[in-house]
Length: 95
Image (cartoon, rainbow, N blue to C red; front, side, top):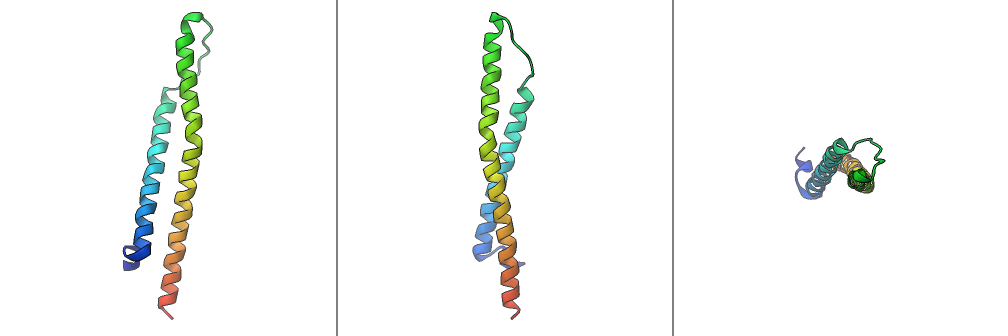
């Protein structure tokens, strides 16, 4: 268990924690923004500013999709890498 907190595995663990925290923060930010999104149809000229605000919000939500996906994949790949390295080091030390 000490191998997980020292050396390369410790550094990779800290990086994984950072990536995962960023990913969770982005998911939270998207959830907060999505709660402000309204499904309304603005037909009048007086409502144009409200329609523009909603379009801007939908644009931001769309732009967040790729970073959220990238951080999620990076976090998952790094987690699997850490586990595989830990197992490999454990098997190697028993020989």
